[in-house]
Length: 199
Image (cartoon, rainbow, N blue to C red):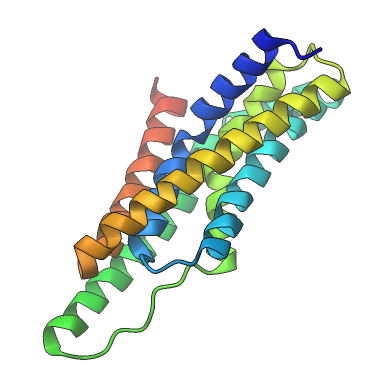
């Protein structure tokens, strides 16, 4: 029988962890407003995979090398900030360049999220989920896997909604969408950094 309390807790945990990935999905949808449904599934699935993997890695660390994991945890906000600032900066640069081309009547090339960028985003938005390994440390392997799977499914649904919203507004914003998307990514990186280091 399913433990309703465990299920609800895992969904809420997944929703909380997915907020950064939701914002990045929104930015990606803004930057690529003609994204196809299979591509949306691939992007949302990538974030969901990382949100599944990170708590499990954290859980393994708690059960094997707690001391090393604790020292690494303090660097995660710095890693997230660096990755998202770099990706956001690239998006802003490309957006400014495309806007100049649009104003001068030149054709702009289609914006398309590269695999390497998607993987960087997946790591940057899920790295804080490593700490969930501490909260599920008391679970056995099956429970930890179940919790991580629920987090992944929740993330997938939330990120798909973010991509759909981004696509809708991306078509309305035209050339400015990529700049806005890049600014959102940098803001997310700063929020993760401030929350993890200064608060």
